[in-house]
Amino acid sequence: MRTPTRVRGDLPEPPSAGRPTVRSVARALEAVRVVEAGPPEGVTLTALSQHLGMSKSSTLATLRTLAQAGFLRETQPGPRYKLGMALIRLGDLTARQQLPGDLTRPILRDLSERTGMTARLAIADGGFPVFVERVDGPGAVRFHTPLGSRELPHSTAAGKAILAELPEGEVESICGDRQLVRRTDRTITDPNALLSELRRIQRRGYSLDNEEDAEGIFCAGSAFHYYGGIAAVSVTGIKGDITQAGMREVGETVRVHAQRLAKLLAG
Image (cartoon, rainbow, N blue to C red; front, side, top):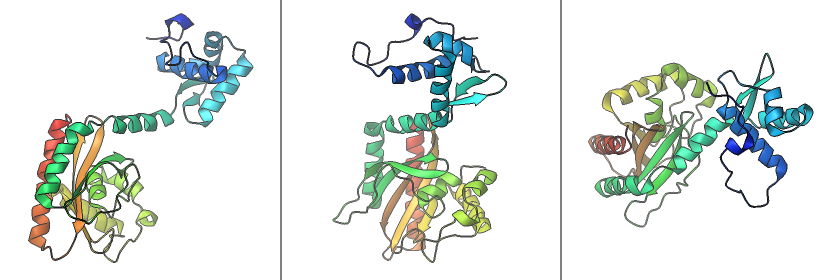
């Protein structure tokens, strides 16, 4: 079992070694590193105080500040300190930023060319799709699809595809009655109807957004698992006169490309 009894020289040098640092910030970061290296039951205030070379009162103030920000959490009896939940979100964000765009972009480009639509890649964040990569479709039409922002899970193709990969209890907590915002007259706002739709998505392997998020817009999406969790690929275009058979054909094309991405990203 690892313990926080290492002397400072045993810790890896921070990136700013040899440069001016803010002492309080350096100590706070070191406290997080000590807790990370500590035992599963957490690190005591006394051990952290000794390691940091600070009084217990100063150490406690630093630890409480970190706990308020979510980087550490205090447990009893003790108190003892463990890593906080904020680090999970930071880890997710880091994983998103490290997605190999140079690997995924060719598949998105191929999908865009085959469908004539804008292709996007989303990462699941608490059941919500967050788009991290995009290849615009051909032609002069460009959709306002900024990267890095959350989109609704129940009215978008990528969002519904991601929800279909989650347990129904988790879907209900994410998409309760008050969370099902009506975007258009076609938006699913009934929780039971949404669960039925997700079961259909599970059977066919892709989701459709037939003007559910915006009027005149059609999307198809398919989710897949990768080394960082759940992701989804989707296409967006003007609905125009596309038929039901055409929608299914686009959905199947998206599903195939989702499988390619899963294989590429070790899903």
